[in-house]
Length: 135
Image (tube, rainbow, N blue to C red):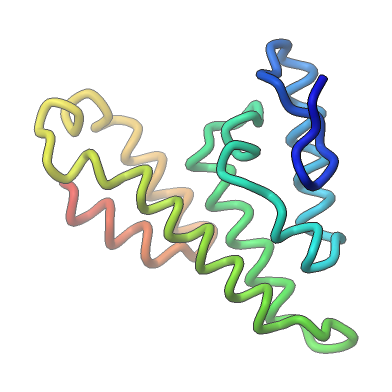
């Protein structure tokens, strides 16, 4: 199995257990990894998780912002904020197709409530604004 630059095994994870384990590895890397490790995580990595890429990206942004806000030995506050901003932009790009396509909005209408609830819980103001504009 191939590995991404950050050492996480890739090549279309098929099994639920593999995807769940991959997601756990990614979460640990985000919570405890250094800036270099985290900056090598790609959007493709987010799509290989068991959870939906949109929700995974929102969780990742939240974790990165929490790390940036920590007081103490965290020397890379600006870098964590930059990565969080980048992931936030990726998150919003997942919602962009809904803006111009009424049919897609209708199909995803029930899911958008879940997206908004999660965005509120994880303090994702940009995502909420994006979803509201899409409705």
